[in-house]
Image (cartoon, rainbow, N blue to C red; front, side):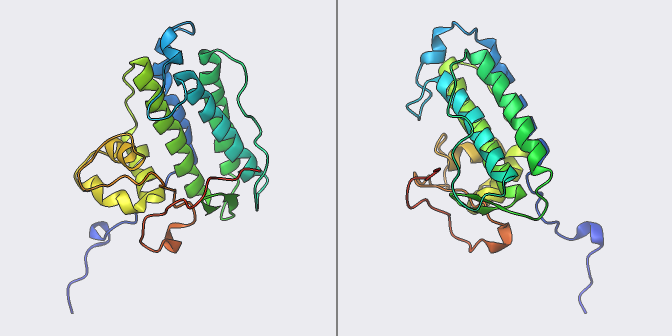
Length: 224
C-alpha cells in the first residue's frame, strides 16, 4: 500500500470568508478619509463605473445594509433595499460603511447553516461574506483611483474571497497576488490567463454545488 501522508501533510480545504473579513474590508477603506469632504476629487468618475467616488462609497453602505436585511429575514426572494443612498458628506458615508459592515457581520454570525436569497443564488454565510468583501474592496478601489489614494487590500481576505465566490479564478492565485486576482476577475485589472467577463457573477451557493464553470449573470439583478 502507498504510504499515507501525515495529517499535517494532507491537503487542507481552502478557508472560507468569514464575518470578520467583512469588517477587515471596511477598515481597509480608511485611507480614503485622507481626502477632505470638500475635495473636488470626490466628484470625479470612479472608473470603470459611471459613479463618482462619493457615490461609490455610498453604494457600498447601501449594498451591505441590503445584504444584512436579506440575511436577517432569511429572504426567499427580493426585498426592498433598507437604504438607497442618503444625503451625506463623504466622511459620513465612510462611517456608514463601517456601521453597515458591523451590522452585516453580526447577522451573519447567526446564519449558521441556513441560507438567504440573493440574485446570484441561495447564498450561505461564506457566500454572503465573499460578496460583501467584493462590494467593499472593488468599489473602494474604484473610489481610490478617482481620489488618487493608495488603497492596500488585505491579502488573506482577498484570497478567501476569490476561492469562495470566484472559484474559476483560483488558479490565478498561483501566479498573482490575491488582490490583483480579485480586481482582475471583476474587471479592474488585466491579468494574463484570466479573462474578464463583463457578465461575471458570484458563486454564492455552497461551494460543493459549483459545477466547475464560471458563473455568469443572464439578466440584471431584481431587488424588488
